[in-house]
Length: 231
Image (cartoon, rainbow, N blue to C red; front, side, top):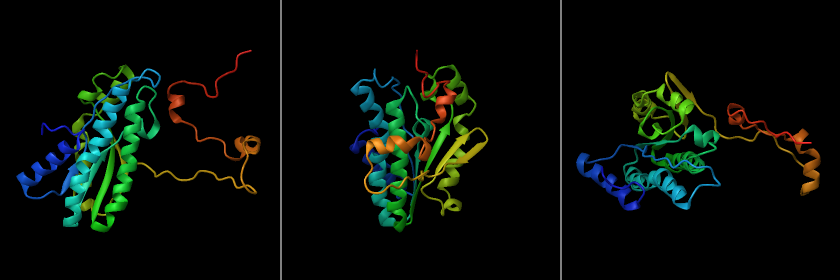
């Protein structure tokens, strides 16, 4: 379709075209994407808006009319696409990472909301070489080129099949011959006090009671945190 997925009219037109051509709609796969890479302090509003529109709104623009049809039919499957940029963060892609993490939240919300209608929704986090990855720098491009996009298709086909009819609300990573199930966020540690906390009281106990859940990519990027103090 030549429709613009970043508009509600475009998303509806795609769903309408599928219904006209096939008479029904059982499966929706949302994988449209673009990149506008920039550090947060250099990113323009247009660069932010364009990526959010294609990725996050682009999912909604198609899933909204598709879900209405599937609700009536009480059957259907929607598959969304996220990225490790969203799951783990990406320093030069704050727009892309925000959109991709938003898609994870959208996936879980749709899975919860549509479960009573027999409709499921799952999310794939792929590593693959596509037109969108052509502009990536050396090491990151090498990681992508290790997996052709064709390697992702069997996972999509399985999740869309009747043999996966019991699976919903999941985030699945695909890289080469690896298929990974990601966990849902869960509380790591809880600190309970007598009454409301003050900033000073938290400062006294935070490090030993709560600590941090370290950003894994800091190590991969070779960044020391906390930074060394000079002098």
